[in-house]
Image 1 (tube, rainbow, N blue to C red):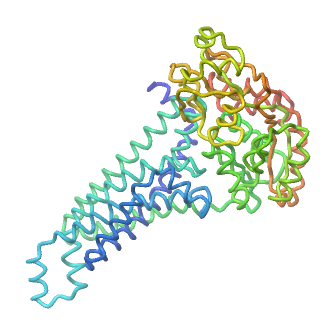
Image 2 (cartoon, rainbow, N blue to C red):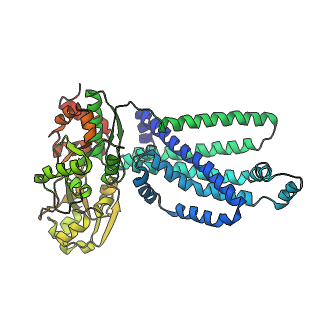
Image 3 (tube, one colour):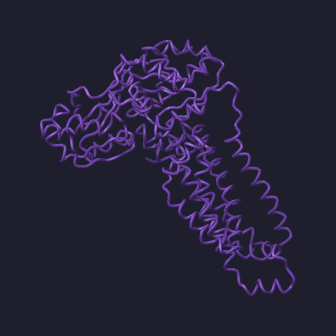
Amino acid sequence: MIRDMWSVFADRKSFFLELLLEHLGISLVSIFIAILLGGLVGILISEFQKTAKPALGVINFLYTIPSISMLGFLIPFSGVGNVTAVIALTIYALLPMVRNTHTGIANVDPAILEAAKGMGSTKTQILFKIKLPLAMPVIMSGMRNMVTMTIALAGIASFIGAGGLGVAIYRGITTNNASMTMAGSLMIALLALVMDLALGFIEKRMGRHSVKAKKTNKIMAVIAVVLCLSIAGGVFMNTQQKDTLHIATKPMTEQYILGEMLDILIEQNTNLNVELTQGVGGGTSNIQPGMESGEFDLYPEYTGTGWNMVLKHNGLYTEDLFGTLEDEYSAQFDMKWVGMYGFNNTYGLVVRREIAEKYNLETYSDLQDVADSLTFGAEYDFFEREDGYDALCETYGLNFGQTMDMDIGLKYQAINQGKIDVMVIFTTDGQLSASDVVVLEDDKQFYPSYICGNVIRAEVLEKHPELEVIFEKLNGLITDSDMAAMNYAVETESKEPRDVAEDFLCSHDLLQ
């Protein structure tokens, strides 16, 4: 495993360096805001004790909200990306800062304060010359805990399309690349350790009070601030070319590949710059709002998903409804469907081979008599879709004994380990051929069509009509077996999505 991780680092140094800088930028901005805001609140509630209990109560309440929920709450207001990540991280970082600042100041010896008052010191002088210096060891302890926690928690930012090392972790899970997952996790741990050591060094320097030490501390503080601002500025104020196309993809192997195809073809055949946000957590539920707000311009989508999840239709989608789908996307969102790849990535059901042989299972209907003794597994959104779990069970009269929600990248691992007995698959899954499972027949034709194509904002297409040429090249380009083979190359043969995309485009003479 160590050798594999080192190989991943060596082969993709620029990739990990970029993620590291993004992670630092997001974390440092959040830490800086939390120090200022948390320190200020801590001082205020220390000076006005009546406000301490309600203020700490509110912050404690916010701290108990799960991080995923917090991100979900914020997305409608601040959208997806780095800004939302910073807001969430700042909220979680406030508690240790406020609490330790308040505790440190509140525990200053009252006799010292009375002596200072007796000598004629003002409240401001007492605060900055006595209270804060004496409270600093407690404040620094809280700050170190906060910094370590923030850096670790920043890994979840990738779920909403923000950058950072969480991208490597999430992508590794999705593409069945354990080395990438471990590499991203190790880098976060090392970064947190380095920052903690740096703060420990700063704490020791602050304990030195000689004239030379104070001068050196000031110089080091200026250098540190400039460095932090440079890193954060590089992440948040990265001035892209004016004509930049923002492409998003879902956290699926084939979407990573399609995103790379779009990136390659657009930058090769136009003057546009492409900013690719890979693997946005929540898929359509988070990308579509980003499209509506203008944060994203283009993303690969599936017709059945658009019909049920975006347009909120309850009925079964078939491709003869595509004209209606296009019209409603145009009328409701001013978006168009372009570049219809050709492959149909619809849902399917598989069972472990031993279960299929034990109960002689061949069709979905065969599950009816044995479902109550089986465990059903699927990704999170399947349980909430109009055409998902509830509709499937109602159509076939199924009542599974247990259900298990899991990330899309962990399903095959779960069924291969016997953690689940039945699971939803996509017909283009690369790992399907490498797993000991039996694909059941959808004997009532429950699952709709999921032809893959691109959804683009109409104003972007009008502004850049040269994109039409590229989308025409994509029409009917990829078959079901082509997509399954490309997914297999990434998930089982450990090839990079961009390399797989380039190989496919080369085989069709689409690369110059």
